[in-house]
Length: 140
Image (cartoon, rainbow, N blue to C red; front, side):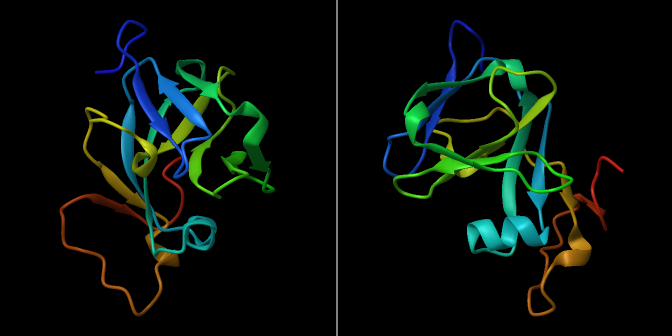
């Protein structure tokens, strides 16, 4: 489990933007929302939620580009390679979401839910994996 003494590391595809997570993930799951589909190019993304204060940018802060959609977390990515890394404000208050594809090790948590399943393209079949399915946001 990530801790201040043994942080979990992660990065974008090119390695310019590097992060550390210093606390355990609180939950994790798949997001099927249209925003995630458009940003990632896939029908859903896998993310973990962690207190924002436990997420640090340790290299490449100058390369971070952030999109602030109306009604959603700020979405940050590497301006060099376009790699999606996190949502929220590192070191801030509240929660942050981390793309599990950006992690260099085991996040210590398995997916627990699928949110925005109502936005899944009709041509995609969601696996019968037993996870809780939520039509909209799990925060609603």
